Image (cartoon, rainbow, N blue to C red):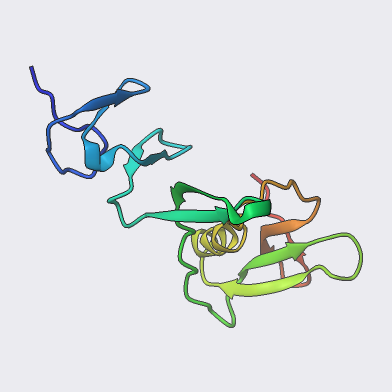
Length: 141
């Protein structure tokens, strides 16, 4: 019976614990579950980062692991796709332009990544828009 770590980093070490049905070695016991794919991404993976927060009086701290924000893609000054800040009132605007819809989606994801400890739902935010020759419009899906 194979008793290897199953976290996906490929370490191949012997599993010493099991959490939520996933066998993990001691070095990979700190992990994040990627929401869309369900992949277990351990603290060894460069896609993760450790967050340390101060938790009130006395300077107590807590730490946890999360996925790093996506890297912002290259900007295309004349691109027809945009990372667009959408809000009520006159503050809506193009933040960055991109050559492809995928680049605009990546730009939105990189800007919309929550700050450590931020669990707030906002009414405004970043979204993908496309230039239709006259206006920046939300693409139809």
